[in-house]
Image (cartoon, rainbow, N blue to C red; front, side, top):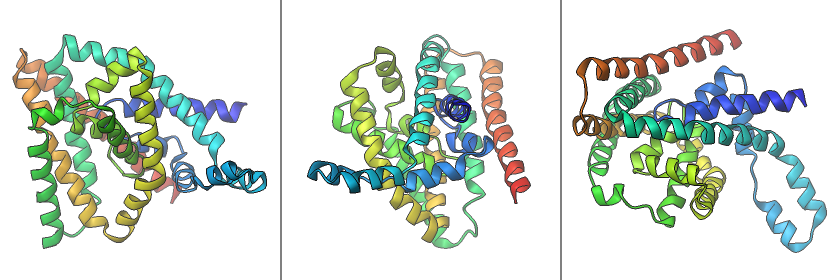
Length: 284
């Protein structure tokens, strides 16, 4: 019981990180000592047990179920979702009452996270630079398309869940940033608070598919084309800064307060990443 309570608490901290764009839940997992187990558990997910279950093959069903670290994942996920429900109301209040300061905080978070991702880019070869430029241009143009940003159909929510959950295997990338980039962040906060079952269930279904499928593709890309992949992601993050910047300008703001919030967001990520780096060095 004590072991699973500690896993749940770690999930709470991951959820607190994941609900703000720019802070990586993976970083919190690393700081709290469960990152490796999380990655192995995600890689071990296998939907074959459903086929055996449909066929009535109980032996192979149990075999595949026990081969997966489901108890760990479910306990961690329960902690993450609890944090989401607790903090989503706070975030929505801040975005409604103090939009410029909140978006400035997000700007600082994302900018600092981009600096962290840059460390994984490696040697700046031509193909790596091109990948980064393409990522920047794609993000910069994408976040400027108002019709896409206001589309919240269930297929879009499903795809958002697929993509956002893959942040778990990407260093320095947060799931909230992906939702922020896709224009679904504020909408999903509202749906969580309203507990809109169809929307939340659709998002979760996409997340499950993403964990089983897309996460494996990302793992392959990171293993075989790491520099280009990270450069593209870096470009995405820098290009997506257009969104918080424009939201700051379109709202009434007090310049010193906006600057302070941006610096605070930047400092949060830098502090977390330095802590994670120190822990990694100590483990080595």
